[in-house]
Image (cartoon, rainbow, N blue to C red):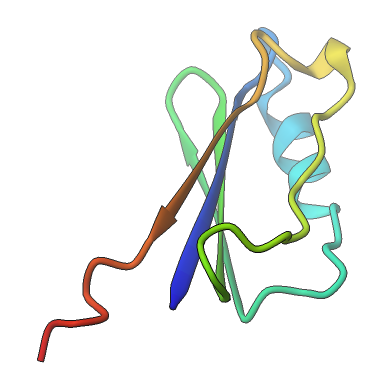
Length: 87
């Protein structure tokens, strides 16, 4: 089963580049088979990692960044692939 972990944070005013750099610098052990980082308006950073694991598996996740980089707390979601049974 494929599980995607999504991590999204909004940077404090003017600190989007710092938040992006911080997120890119966070290593996960073990590393996921796939990892992508996105940005959006309002200095938001999104990191999605993909894993071949059961939905409830213990998987490494990005931590919360230093509070001074954040406009609000980090949001986290976990999804499982809905395409596994699609031919």
